[in-house]
Structures are given as C-alpha cells and as structure tokens.
Image (cartoon, rainbow, N blue to C red; front, top):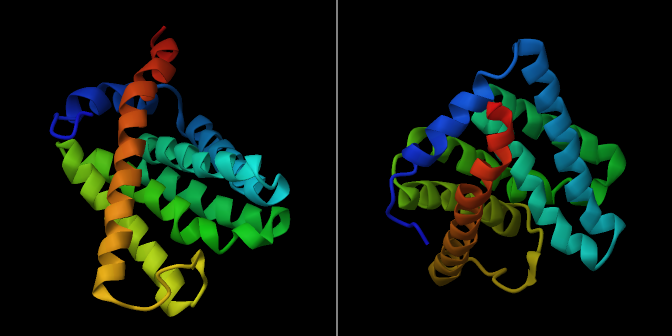
Length: 187
C-alpha cells in the first residue's frame, strides 16, 4: 500500500483532466448522473439481498468522482442521492448519509486538501467514524447490529480503527483504478 506517498502527483493530473473536460451544464449533468448511479448502487443492498450488500459499498465511487470534479458538485450528488433513495429504497436512506456518503465526501475533500495518503485516510475515516457513531449513539440505529451499541471509548476506538482500514482500502483502490478510468478522457 502507498500509505506515505504524495497523492497529489497521482490525483492532481486526474482532477485537471476531469475538471477541464466540458462546460458547466455538462458537469452539472455528470454530477446528477453520478447521484443517480450512487442511489442505484446503494439501493442494491435492499433490492437484492445478499449480492446487493456487496454492491452497495460501491455507491461511494460516484460521489468521490463528483467531489473531484468540484466539491459543490460532490455535495450536489450526495444530496441528490439522498433524495433519490427516498422513493427507491427508503430503508437505505438512513445508512447512506451517515456512512457510505459521509465517507465519500471525506475521501473527496481529503484528496483535494491533503498531500499524503495517510492524511486522506485519517480525514475520511473520521467522517465515517462520526457518521457511524451518530447512527449508533444518537439515533440508536444498530448499523453494526447489536455489536458496539454501548457508548464506550473502547468501542469508538474499534469503530475508528475499522474505519481507518476501510478508508485505506478505498484510497488504495482509487489510486490504482482512477488513472485507468480517466486515461481515455485525455484523447
């Protein structure tokens, strides 16, 4: 893994390619399509039990791509996804804003703001950890099942540690796959 590499050298050329592609209406439409894709992927968890649970974590990817286009487009995609989940799959409506979507916003902002991958991982895992803790301890929604429902410092450390690992995997995946996806846009 590339925990301590400078990610700006990997991400900035990609961001410049994506941002410089088209005009504002095209970018707005792309952000809307990314929100739709994120809603469909997130709804897969409720529509297709079993295999859908493996698909739904990938709803972070369209939000991250929208964040790389522009943070305002990323927030637009995030909010659009929340509103689209209401009629499509209301049971996923409470999960997305606090976990998958919050992590995607954290990763997107982290990729724009920070230079080192460990900074991005720490930042985005903080978003994910706060979202999970809000669900568990404020809303009393058992997002992790009955596990870790009691508010303890040890439980928060466990949640943050798991968030670090999960966000680390996401950053690694992005840094490996994003250049391959964006390369066709250069021509």
